[in-house]
Length: 452
Image (cartoon, rainbow, N blue to C red; front, side):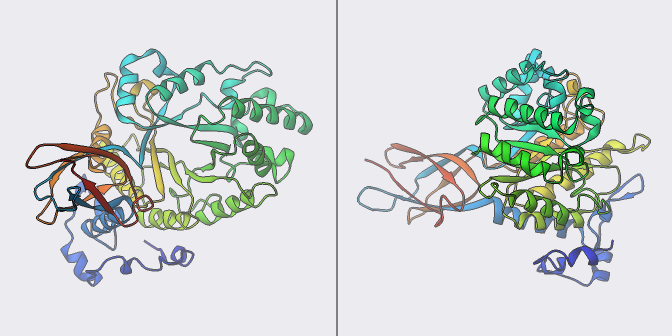
């Protein structure tokens, strides 16, 4: 696996050999490898020149550094006396990381699907329901009934929604009437579209995909000029200035040979949009579709891509993640789970990745690529994997006990917590809620008093 050319473009990531403290000569490592095979497939091709255990160890290290905080509970009475043996009940209320899923209008008349979705996810992308061709298939005939109702459902259950998408730069997905417009009429129609959807949902969405896939495509640039995307970002920004605006692109992490969407080209376009006159104060984010194919994933490329993109300090969302398998493969289901787990673990180890949207969830939305459930909302192997990782990457409910100095330490995933402290002598309890992250708790100390 050749990495040298790519590594030269990534500062501070010159060699993975700096990532592992127990580095051994490559020959020795190869001799120690435990090869897992699925009908001849060698899983270690994902990790060469490291073992799976070494790769996973580094991921755990980055997760602990970027997504967890070690709390120091200091329990005292009002007179500052330390409380020995105080029980500290810790309950995670929310996570700083969002698990999300694609959603379609089919959820609206299916109570079981609604219950399933609301029980698992805190974020959503609508598949098509916010796209221009869906809301205005014929000129002047707008219909927002489906997205209005879907957003109402999401709001009711505390699910944040991305605005996918205001405009799409691919000519294939333009309405026939849009394709026929002159440049002057196209600009009028596109501006009307921007104003209509952004004003309607202003302040209600976590982000907007303003111009979808404008690294690979250029429908609007060809007709309106090279700065068309930057101008539309500016228009959205002026209507909804407090919402994060995203680029949303495919193949930036998936394929090393895609000449259009490599990370450095993604960042170049991002800079062009941010530096366009009037856009300097715009909140922006990085949207990566993450549609992986049937070939073994190049985790080295994924890691370097996410590391490079993270350096600009913007939130990264994986917006449409799935793994497509060759239907001719006898072991396709097993390989799909293997590939999916590795890409999820690698993505989660980068703290700049704030959310992962799975594409798709329930089979009611179609399973042409990947689904978490069957028609009865029973888990597929993909669903089992995601449930397992959801459980692994949360703190849940735990209990610790203070020592003779009234101190107890525990490492938790960043998020909001409710903590109840119980006096060992009187069973009197005190309760408090607070936010856990490196900004909210820079010294990591939680001082709690038991009132008697």
